[in-house]
Image 1 (tube, rainbow, N blue to C red):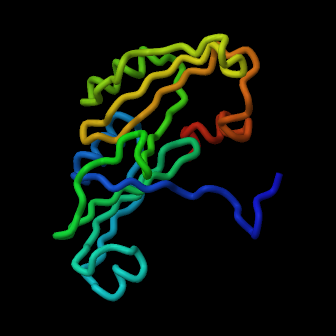
Image 2 (cartoon, one colour):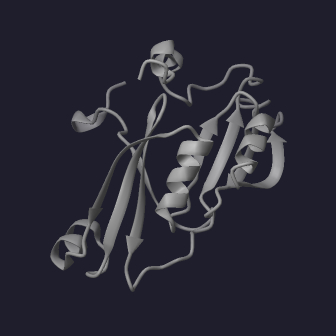
Length: 179
């Protein structure tokens, strides 16, 4: 299946964080991300309001990270007198989470807890009421600053749907060893 209008692939996703240094440390130390570059912009009332839909006094710092084999993550720390500081809950408009496929949910939980993440409710397993993904083990956590994370192990699913993407994402050339 091809994408419409010349779209090629997802390039990155971005998250606004309250403390850029803390978030970068978590992504690099706990999740193995590599820092690609940093940038800053603003304040610039005309540019920022027109191009980012933020208050005129807003300024930003950002770090672009590479998370092998297939994800770039852009972290922003914004500064503005008119900044809202509460995270949307999962059920709120704008709610979001970042999910990682893992080999062992329990081992990944232990690792992320050692880096300050907090488990929400423990590990669950999808039952026969959802037969397409029955056997899927998963849990939600919160990063130290509140970002919702999910861990999922689909190794017990009998015939999983093609959720992750092309099979070549797991090839040795894309596991980070050759990047």
